[in-house]
Length: 67
Image (cartoon, rainbow, N blue to C red; front, top):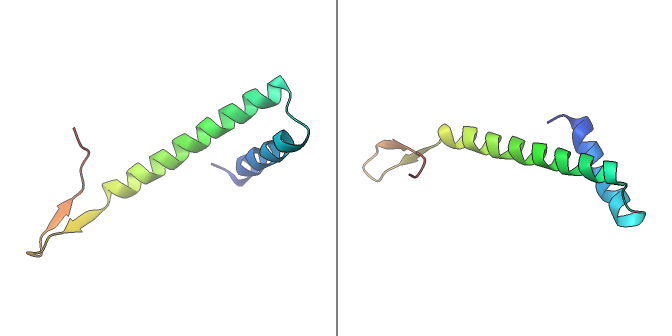
């Protein structure tokens, strides 16, 4: 997610609190927020895929997805 998109999300949030948004701006805000959520979720999953737990006996165990 680019800084310009993050700035736009913040700009729309401020405008929403003060004067309100048009229908087009509401749709844009929803789309940008969904894109942001997907970005955060993807980054978290990638980070967890590279995370290991060290067991007391010194072995590394990779964190996996729960079924």
